[in-house]
Length: 351
Image (tube, rainbow, N blue to C red; front, side, top):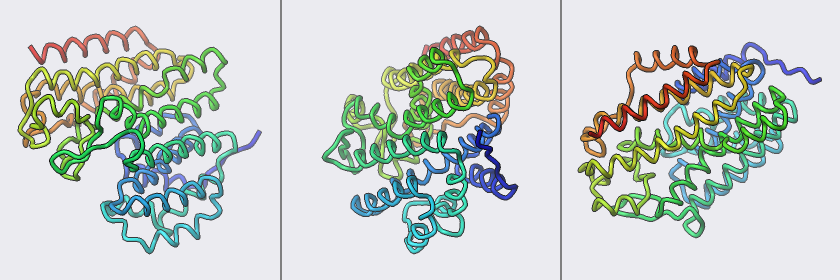
């Protein structure tokens, strides 16, 4: 059996950069048992490197070249020094200071050094799904491929609902698949459990992505993009793109689409064996804040898609989500009841 061990400075590196790129998920990763916690954190940061390439405001050909180098890093992390040296000379427009740090030699090298240490079975899982994400991102950026992106009022957005769903799969469903395979490998789930989890593994990531699309709508719009499909936007004469709001029934439709994904995630979590405590707790700590975010959005539906659009739960609400997650980590009945009550509350908010 191969022993995986990280030095103190390597553990601190993962902790530091997880907090820089995602404070919420930085609270989740310590829930995993060792060494799954390090595998998940490393994979998450590697996926963020791919996100940074997609988000960088350069030409498609420039992004393709960087994606090719990223693929090379996945295959041969020993090349990290050379590739990151080249990346350090780029200005990475569109990225903030923390995002840029992952892309340079001084701050990014340790990530790939840690990745190189991961045992081959877990590393192969990360490699497989990070590569799949990159191929999906290339399709998103290439106007000749699906998902089809169109431009309306100077804003880029997916054309049809299936394009919206396809985008969410590429950037988040794939992450759910990767996390599930890492968990199956770590806990050595039997074939039946593994098959059940794999059947629904993409929905958790897609549910969180769709929740974030609602939460971050004005910020995305300011960056020239809307992730809700054009076919929906046309139903309300483009008013959300102008932050002029939307009719209640349209807003309810958008939130219901997210609720469907969140409810599927409940079914997925209920299939995780109780003995996989860390993985169940981490999954719940992702799901419950998403549920509460959707409820908060429903309760102020009249402000959504306007200049007053603000969908962020309070710290006290987030803290309560953590406590609730701990209380139902071995209680599927409590989880199901929580889900049902949330659904009722969201429906009531639109009365």
